Image (cartoon, rainbow, N blue to C red; front, side, top):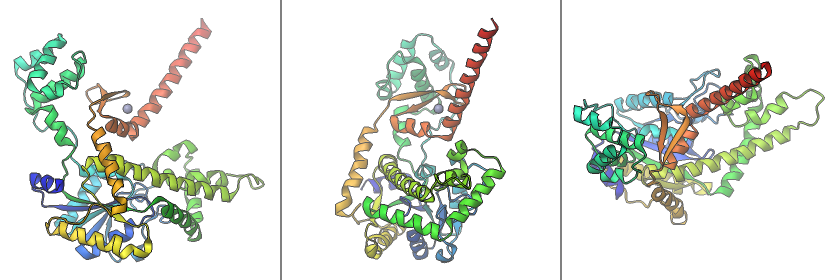
Length: 428
Ligand SMILES: [Zn+2]
């Protein structure tokens, strides 16, 4: 119901299908089935599958199983490069445009769910309507009396003003500035911010209950090794050594791929060292794969579902012997209505999995969260500290590449300062 209202508001005719879900649940297989049925092409949104080669380690869908369906944003980034979400945004948008131009349906598939934010308009757009401020407005904004600024905001947008303490001068001032520059109440801007999609988008969540999934993931690791994953790991290791990468860089780039860091002790062991066992590395790889799958489900529940206000359809891939009915046919039926602009009458989720979606709703309510978090290491272009509104966006900021690298830089600086003081003290 909510979906229909969202759609009619924005008159979006261009369609996109998204398949979310954990690693190893069958997203690639489903995407091929949908692409064949609806004349689609696939856009990869997995941060590891963008890297060149090592198809087994990155779980790229084998070429011979793609049935001729084109795949975009995949297998194009060198190992010395570091891929990041802004680049994904550019490449994904370009691919969507190209696919639409051919009159086909883009199907976005991948496990890096925060990349899906590319499909949302969530930035507060103050630039597009940068109005020139009047002398009176400037005078109010620059007033040194916090009450003047606060009371003006209270008149213009009482909803947003109520979220702040009058003494929270800088943020109150910022909100008033947004109001003047856009001519729109910040409270409205923020409310809209969460619901705007760039395209008419259908979200599908391919899900398996944990126990059967974990068993499948364990088996997949064994299978990967049998198909030659060790050779790929050695290939990576050779490049890693030749280019003098270090273990701490395993948080970045292709080195984050599950299985590389886990095998490092084994790869770098001395020939006579019997303390490093291959079995232990394999075990660690399995553990990390399961942890990753758990995090992915958490992200879908706590981030994706609230963002899209629960507008998602869950497909059950727990019992693979039922795949055709519970995953494939259900996905095709839902997509068919979506593509033909027929109201989707299918249930959001099979009865026994309905709780998964309502957990998301609970989070959604909690997310009416206006808490402001100021980052003390990151600054915007205007030199001001980065502020995130709401726990959710704060968490996104904390896990961003930009924040992590600023954090490291500031730690290095602190070290250096300490050293300078220490040195000076010694001299004196
Ligand atoms: Zn930061």
